[in-house]
Each structure stands twice: as structure tokens, then as C-alpha cells.
Length: 241
Image 1 (cartoon, rainbow, N blue to C red):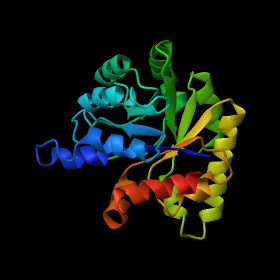
Image 2: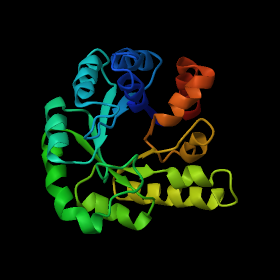
Image 3: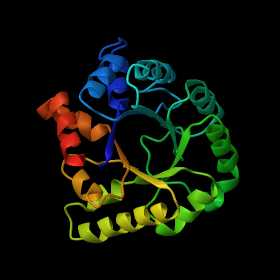
Image 4: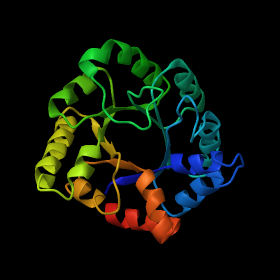
């Protein structure tokens, strides 16, 4: 079974676009948890254009009423981000190598280059009992480096997988992701996955049992326009279960 963590960034984007607390992120988070989702994810960017730092505190408070469910906060580890994470104390923190001006995440860490900067950040988070995940491209050779800098898990950046899904390269690309996941497991790391996963392609990635958790937000929100939020969350849980 692969856990589903629902990324609520697009709920925040809709809310912020009108300057009102509508849709209400906490209400949507509660609805999502009641449907059976294992976790909630947000990625508050410096400009807070969708999820905000306050959302992190609000969702942590909500999760007190849902023992065993998890909060995952993603982001680039600048000092403001780390201050919020270390105060909120989410179950999991996914470190992403984003430039502040990026539209969305589009690459994994270059650990060989960034290891000296990552180690003290990872140590600070783990000292507070936070599980640390590194956003990674599907390169099996880099999983040992992720382990060496202290990560607990990796999150495989799955845009290439999603782009190849309906092409002749689909099997080859899936095999590459499976090899990267297995390399991570061999190093004692857990494996998450996320970016452009949807109802159509998520099952194949997870069917071999190497993926512990997927984080899905954009596609889930778009699919909900056709099928309704509750129906889409339930369908993901069926596919991943």
C-alpha cells in the first residue's frame, strides 16, 4: 500500500486570489482526512502565493484531532522556512532546491555540490524529530549520497515519468524510476514520489511496492473539477490501496 498525502497548495491559490478565506484550507483538509487520506502536504513559497506559513500552523493544529495522520511541509530551506518548520514541527519536511522565483519545482538536489549546505539543515530538523526527505531526480547513483548527508527518505521527482507515460519510452522510464527507488531502499531510505502524478499514471509507478508515499495536489484539484473532490480522493485511495 502507498500512502496518499494531498497537497493543498491549489486550495490556497484559489483562496488567495479573492482575498477571502474561501475556500477554507482547514475545512478542505478536514474533509480530505475524513475521506481517508494519510497526510496533508503544503509547499509555502517565500511570496506565499498559495499555501502560507500560517497554514502550516493551522494544519498542525487540525492534525491533533487525527492521530496517526501526517503533515508534510515542502520547501527550499532558507532561514525563514526553517524557522517556521522548527516551530510547527511537522511529521515530515521535504527539502526542495527551488529558486524563490520558480513557478514550480523542476529538478532534484545536486547533492555532490550541495552536501555541505544540506548536512547542517538536515541535522537541525532531525534533532527535533522531523523526518527529512530530499527531492531527487531518478538517478540510482545519487541515493547513497542522500543517505550520506542524513536524509530519511527521498522524493522522486516524477515529471519525466508522467511525460513519458503515453509514449514508447513509458516502460523504459518506469524502469528507471523503479531502479532509483530500489537503490534508495537498498541504502535504507524510504521512497516518496510526486509531481504530475494523476489518476491515470499513479498506479503503475506504485504497483511494485517500492513507493511509501505519493504527494498529489495539482492533478487532484483539476480532476476534482470533473468528478468532485470526494470522488477523486476516494479513487486515489482505491488505486493506492
